[in-house]
Length: 397
Ligand SMILES: *Cc1c(COP(=O)(O)O)cnc(C)c1O
Image (cartoon, helix red, strand yellow):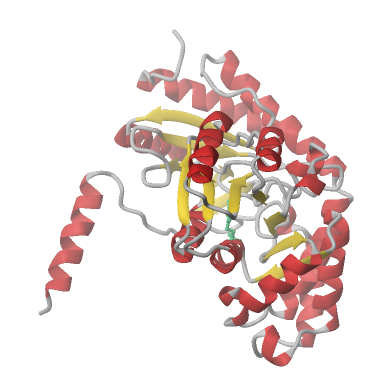
């Protein structure tokens, strides 16, 4: 027997002991506000399906219709080409984002990995928020660029690092950030980042994975909500969260896109998205663009639940966001709380290190436009009751 078996067993045992072991479980109806697990109905606070579109019959029908064009796309787009639908979709994404060009990717992870490793070389400097998504971190690692990690949402620290890179004579600088942070629901200080990018001659890339569909007049994202989209060099986003489908994009000036098409290994060396997914994204994009009503419902639901928890003594951030972190701190205590919530009919999973910093374990509640307000009230009450009975730190009194 190789030493691998023993080592794997040791590591798995350690994870189990520390409450860090991850496992997958079967659930059904995960695309709806109430899902079913082990025969039990649970109110779903665990998805990124903010607008409820993953279960939308119009998108599902569009996917079925598009599947008639083929089960798969047969090769990389650079080898076999792409169908007219893909071409039309990229044009529509560019138009929606107010950019010259757009490029589709298989998913957000591959988009970030490909974009960052294509653009950055070891002689470039990259400035990355400490809480950026793993796909950004991995893209930066793969590029070998000189990396400067700034404290979360701290423009002063970023500026100090920009100065430091200038003193070292680094010529090309790229600032990269999530617009909405997935585990906290807070937003990057984008106006300040644009000012810094201009002052220091850097480029700026934003990841709208959690902002797309949710913010902006047509769901374009946070930078459109703020009216600063023209100052951003690369707008990346996904179709897997509020859009409810799969896939990702980057929108930028034509030459940036042409360069990426020639250099992104995660685009060149992978099969194009299947027709059903292209059809689904097209339908979802149209619903997102006309989705003001859904966005309004989403924010109403989020603030309703937030307010109930505050009234019940929880300290929770007040910002309007589809994501609500209830930080517990201790990992084991967070797991116990999550388990108690499950027993009480609430599916809101514990987020543990290394997804969040040690000592910052939390329950992450995410909201949906089609959550039922009675379910929300009942769940908020339940959360408060359980929090009290467990004597959580996070609660006043
Ligand atoms: C989810 C997420 C991704 C990855 O997107 P997928 O399409 O799921 O691969 C990238 N960046 C951020 C900020 C995300 O939240």
